[in-house]
Length: 412
Ligand SMILES: [Zn+2]
Image 1 (cartoon, rainbow, N blue to C red):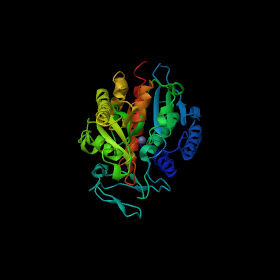
Image 2 (cartoon, rainbow, N blue to C red):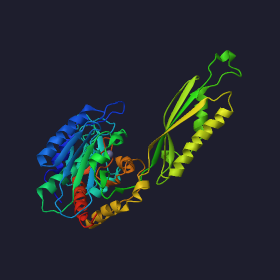
Image 3 (cartoon, helix red, strand yellow):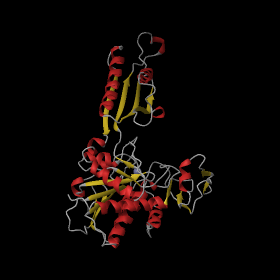
């Protein structure tokens, strides 16, 4: 369906810089996200939502669309994040390409960069669509301003159409998804929904309810540094031990050589000299046991290296980051079924693959609120080649409306 303010709303949102900052310790990580949420709050007031509340403790802005039915139906939540990824987001100048022909390369402003279907064949499926792109100097921020614009447009539409029967709906806009911390402080009690969806996925049809299990691995190595002239039988080179550690990991279990449901170790940072060295990894696996095996392997390698040395010099610290939301979702598949049925009714083919990453919903699901992820429309997220189709954003709003409507058919 066409929605009057969807495109203008999206363009207004993306022009406001909301980049998060992983080196900040404040919540939200940047003041610009607070500024954005303040503007959004004013907009929600204007639209006429209830219970509008900005929670300073976690940076979430929440509101209610009141029920229009006497039936006792579950409360649904819709959630998106307002921050954008770690890429230039100063002075975002979106371009609107109407009636795209599906084959031409799109010139990204004067930047010298092109969005070319030869390189990005996803463009082929957008013949006849209105595309929004960057000018080549910034990201677009469709991740996740498209989700924000869709949820606000959905809320606006329902309030203007009280004749549409639906239960109570809760909406939330939060910070810092891109730095992996935003949902840590999400308050499921305040949100008070029976189940929810993040609207933060990519192309049309995406429906995600399975994510990686994730942990971080830090390896610290203490060497023994002496002058090379007296090094014989004495020196222990921490950097060489670091290389040995990495060499003992399975060579093919890295992101560039794994796909689908295969897990990996990713070396994200290394530093070292003779005296000290450190390695940072992220570990990912769809199976809980698989993640455990990877953790055990890291400990085992450290032990084996230590046993070959004069003293324990290799230490391993592992921290869990998030878990596969399917652990929770498997007992709440009606939430996924509702989204499937909604898309089916709208002739949208669902694309249900396990996310090789995490979503805010992985954390929120484990807090007791089952929260799969719905498509928001963005393509090539996190950089200058990011773009989104207006028609797909419209379909995303259609899906939210259909979910809200279908939900009144099943009693609590
Ligand atoms: Zn996102």
